Image 1 (tube, rainbow, N blue to C red):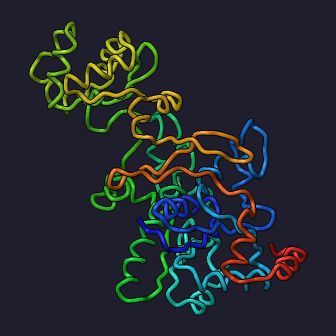
Image 2: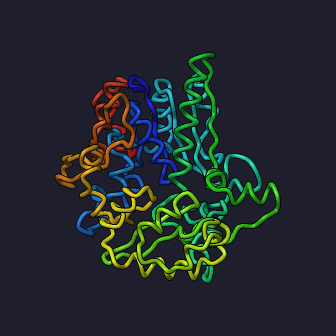
Image 3: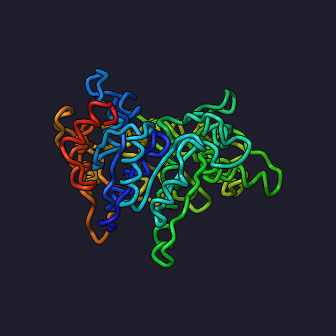
Length: 388
């Protein structure tokens, strides 16, 4: 949808999903890595559990379809190459500590360049220089405080959710800036704070800001509705969500439910929620009679929101997922043949095809010769100096 645009991706884990999203939108994305490889190449999980620069499955996903250029931009010769590439680029993505990159020099070289920065706490403010791995962003954004069992300390979400939230907002901000540049021709800076993107995802911050009410942990139990929780099946778990509109349907399906549940007061959401422990015990005994897929299918037919809690294997094997071709086979010199997650967006009936990640420095020669017009002698000199 957006072919013809060029993005330079200098990000670490905090922003690499942004570059992937732009690539899936149609951008040509150059992943600029230090000569020793991007740090994400050293993050697991790895193919066959064997650490290798070409074996990181995390890097493979976040950088699929990008081109890899090795470049030490901290050296004068490397910085000059980056400036020359910036002249041709539409977007530069970066996630270095504020003040590390000379953004003014980049903008002077290309006044129309859009610069998107993803950092823990933004480019300004007292915390701008604080270090921010994913767990810090999740905690400082407030979402960790309401995550987990109410009887236990807060827990972190799996994966790197705060980085991915920030990258998604960074991609959105980049596209909005690109649209605005089309109207006035001006380059812009997009400043994304991981802390702020996490805080914007849930109602805990805005609820407290509005009325001073502090939300606490409820585990998987919905704060206002019951039964609305994860319940056991004979072969796994389901998530069941029953509001006032679904309550009588559930009782009709649950033929031998306790007679007291037919009393009029149980129709009220607040009444059921106030008795959640008792109700959840009764519902759990009922759901254990079924296999998870069987229960989900029957309740869906009855108009009751219920679906299986998927394992990764079950998700990939779902006929629905196969029909939509979310996972597509790709080939990679080191990873071999595997299923790559394609872009989770379909436009006009078409999904962007899945592609593998680049090998380290795979496109260095192509980019420097074809885009910048460097000679082989110049490339050999940069290689000898350790710049590429």
